[in-house]
Amino acid sequence: MSTDRRRAILEGAARVIARRGVRGLRMEELATEAGVSTALIYYHFKDRAGVLRHTLEFISDRADRYTSDDEDGGAHDARRELERSLLLEFQDLPEVRENSTAWGELRASAVFEPELRGDLARATLTWIHDVADLLGRIRPTAPAPALTASAERLTALLEGLSTRWLSGALPLAHARELAKEAVTVELERLRD
Amino acid sequence: MSTDRRRAILEGAARVIARRGVRGLRMEELATEAGVSTALIYYHFKDRAGVLRHTLEFISDRADRYTSDDEDGGAHDARRELERSLLLEFQDLPEVRENSTAWGELRASAVFEPELRGDLARATLTWIHDVADLLGRIRPTAPAPALTASAERLTALLEGLSTRWLSGALPLAHARELAKEAVTVELERLRD
Image 1 (tube, each protein chain N blue to C red):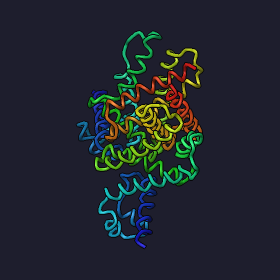
Image 2: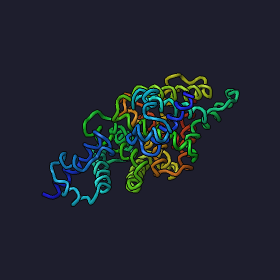
Image 3: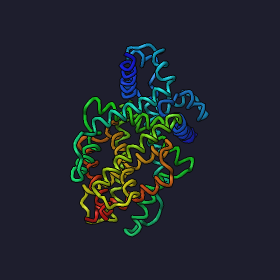
Image 4: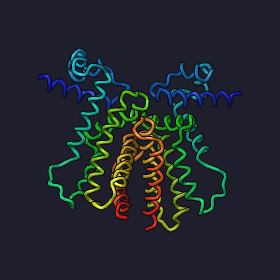
């Protein structure tokens, strides 16, 4: 089925990016990885930029899936949900490591490939918005700009810690600890 | 003079990395950029990994130069010095932009090039140590592990914000604001 092969291409792209980087992504290698022809890749995604854009969307959706749950999510659960959603980025599971690597690579590549920037900026805003939302459920009286600023810091910190972890400069357990404490620190700030 | 040409090679490497990324760094292009022969590059730095290692050292030293000053540095100045040293990473000056880009690229590349990791981890530790030192001058009673954790968060946040800035996802003025507020937030934390 067409949807299956489309998905196989995106899964393959995430794997190749996590293994060799965005700049190592060649359409021929991706075709081999996904078990399809390069023609089919171009048919579905038009060009290399199209593949990168949709891979970004694909890994964002996949991260949503492993960082969210179906709980009812009352205000008293928001803190737990926030911590879980931020800490789940730090797990030594192949899918999480692959996702974090690919996200970091897309971010780093956008410095050199401007055509990636628009989609990446949009995906980042969505992420910031989701985190600000959870913060607002924990601190309902905090003003919106303060919530957004805290969410911007927490998500940027997560990206910074994640690249340190993936490049071997920071042990996983310590990255989790620093992220968890950052939540506490920002929530303290939002109490004032 | 040999020292001048060595320096020209490192300046050239920082420029090429900032323009095209670590993975775009070819020895032939670097030779052209620095106005030397490839043989001289190999003579001074042995191989590509040697060039990358010494470029890392070069940009770290250069950042030290533009982020430090010669003030006496009493305790009451430590806060200003801390803010200045962290905020000076966010300036729209060619040298600063080039330095931040090259540092971010070396960090991102270390995910895929393990031979970069040792030196990068050491440079990161030095940076964390310097920031923890300044924090300790402002909060002399805070325990050392808390100072280190705050410094780890501040420096990782800076890396995260810097990549967002350089990839066009975050305006410079807002990056500065978020970094400045992060200092306040962590100092509040260290007061307890």
